[in-house]
Length: 119
Length: 119
DNA sequence: ATACATAGTATATTTTTAGATACTTTTATT
DNA sequence: AATAAAAGTATCTAAAAATATACTATGTAT
Image (cartoon, helix red, strand yellow):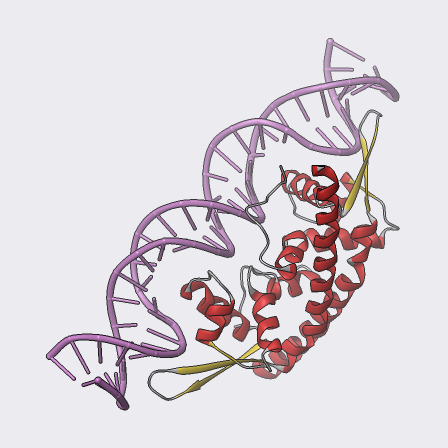
């Protein structure tokens, strides 16, 4: 049988947002991309500030399951695990860049508007 | 004072996803765009199949609050209310198009893979 | 033998989202 | 007087997402 998260996606947009719409997902992909496409669990933990290890693990597992991340385990002690973007994951980068830029511009605009309001 | 959804966004990406990451948000913007940038409440209700009026209203209010949608009320009976994209909302269209295309391609790939697996 | 490092698990709880169902408003029409 | 149309509200409940806190495994270094 085939998997199902809660049921079939309604359309391509729905499908896409289920994969990267989570609270930290796009950010995690972005951080990895920025760090030359490799980050260890502990490094991510520091970058995604305030995330609990449970959430981080869960999110990473979902990204892996959706084939956006590779997880490479080194058989050493203490453990070493590296996360990197898959080819499919890399395809999302321009898009993440785009919406990040939009967000940045919006935040700027809001700041200006709020300045006006408060004076 | 200034508003807050639950608290300040962590970064531009976080900011952006809070605005369009909801279950139906991107889809609603997309539908309106596709219909020449105007849709009435009842039309949206039909297009966003299975959404409850409560959710639809709530989602539309959030989009309006975030300045992605205009809400135009005609003072007639029975009521007539039209929703259209703001300029800011329109800026998101290329991005929505992009991720929709990615989703479509991914779904295709998965279909092919599942076919292989199942035979 | 004890402590440390790293990458997690386990469990319980809270918060956020979403869903179900019924009801409201105001004129025009029958 | 009753009914209909469109765009919602109100209330309650359920499901999903996120948080808090504590704990585990295994070699290596002290």
